[in-house]
Length: 183
Image 1 (cartoon, one colour):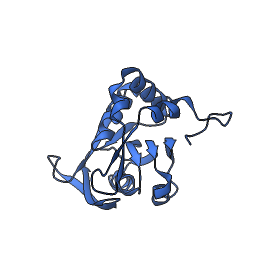
Image 2 (cartoon, rainbow, N blue to C red):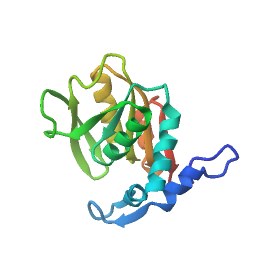
Image 3 (cartoon, helix red, strand yellow):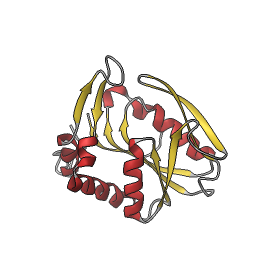
Image 4 (spheres, rainbow, N blue to C red):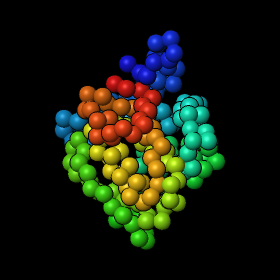
């Protein structure tokens, strides 16, 4: 069920992700099955392979990496470092000092607001958005809107895991989306 290799089999990196996920039932609320990828980031060689896999796709194609709070910070910073680029954090509302722009969105278990500094991007800057999971698409869509409102261009949205049954990709329109593993 991962993104296929050229021969149609699940890719090596998708299998790596699959073997490092664990299910946490009823988190953050009853009825939600949380896909936890902390075992993957706790495994140094697995984390390195994941970061290198992502970075290789975007060499020379992006100018800055965006990491979405909180797990997207981990991957975003690592991928930015691997690419020799800066990383811009997208934070929950009220967490950034200075002038910000804010976007509200719905997610699978509630509502939230995220924000970014108004001066986080240069006009036309090519942005790679990174997060751990694409579920309903609310967070990724709100992040893309913030990036675009700030004058930058979303080159791609990269996620470790896509929960296809929640159809979050539909909310992202024609934006380029890559999921390493799709369930």
